[in-house]
Length: 336
Image 1 (cartoon, rainbow, N blue to C red):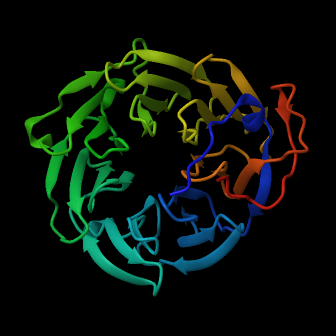
Image 2 (cartoon, one colour; image 1 turned 90 degrees about the horizontal axis):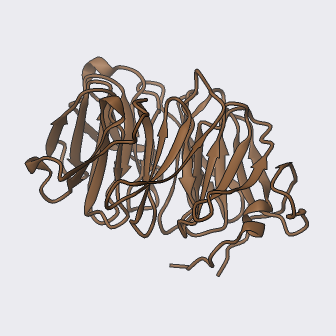
């Protein structure tokens, strides 16, 4: 796997739009990068699932899923297979599907959730994956079998995330609480619970840094927090403009040194976690970015609303001021 150099403020500040995809027929609900291949997948309100080559900025394939729709999506370990949650026909409990993008087949249905799935993540080490639903349950699954492997019944709207080693997973609960579970013995209950003091807003996004030392939380009130993943202490926190109808997403850079987030005013922001200083603020031109992720193998991130954008460094872009900037870049280039 290609290693990335450590980022610096100037590189982050130089990020600019390299590719724009605007032919979606609705809001993009979720997106995911493959861990080892230069691929990105999106799920959209127009019932499409789209596969992109991020190295060349090209759409590779579009499939439509009119019966069930497409809402949350994530890659499996195979580069042409994804897990996708349903938007329609939830009374059949066919809330999750294992899809082959290669030949547009449904390989398996996962039945159990009674309401929409709002959070989905794949284990980085095996065929397990987790789903959190508005039915107040988190379910643990195995790609190889239809039956649910485990259920956690919770209060509130659950958000789920594995750490990058696959040994621990986090689940958000009512009142902003985060519970940590050992993925090998989750039936014994959480081994730790974190609370962000003073903020009881619903957590809508959880991510672990690649080194497993930090945890990112985004809340419905558009506050972003970085916690120590071992002890739960708050390392830093940032408040963003409200977006009443859109939950924003935030992302770590692969080295865990920077945080990038959308905002209710349609801008994108980057901070240094070490210094807690804002490094950049970019005009976005696509509205509030509800989906935002940094690529695991490249100096690149994707931001999406009803439009998908790829961002890479632009060497010609001024990097002296962290104020609002807007520039265009060229073809995404892999860093070795």
